[in-house]
Image 1 (cartoon, rainbow, N blue to C red):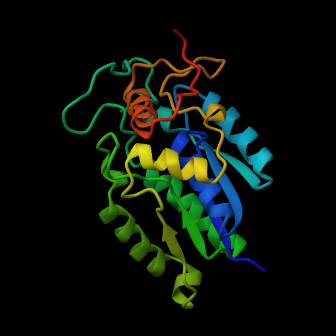
Image 2: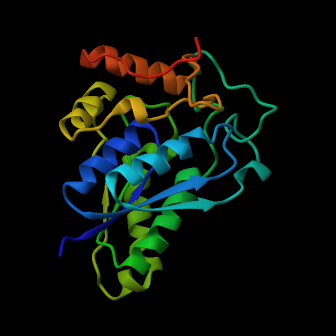
Length: 222
């Protein structure tokens, strides 16, 4: 039997690349989150991607919108259409910590050997929970906080995109057969999953396709 991995799947470009990468190595279970985000069409994409990939898929409901503090969870805060200095307002407080905690629970239940997350420290928005130091600290906590860790069962945190440019992420995904037209990365995609083309996520995605020399298959509102 192949080893098992829990893959965090948002339905966007990075996480879909991670799923394809992980499927070449693991038996995968994908987790997605309805966390009160501004656009939920990414979850429609995640569900469809998981079905096409033939992986077990769970959508977990949590309500970070109750807390707010981010343009992605508080509709009174506009999503910026320009690059920001420092940590941008689209950062969702503790989001990856919370997501990885659910993945850790799933890994124990499924007796998985790995958790795969598509964080990136090159072409990214400057979020503190996308840094290698964060993953190292979480992995150390996981060894202390779980039955599996106490009993010496190894759990690997896989971050295959961590040091890749967006262009190289796209190239990696194409090598693994990813159809990026089926992914949704926009922070404020409309009900049809069409991207705004202006937010930070859209800008990074567009530039990535340009740098990779690949036609951008994204559906835009304009």
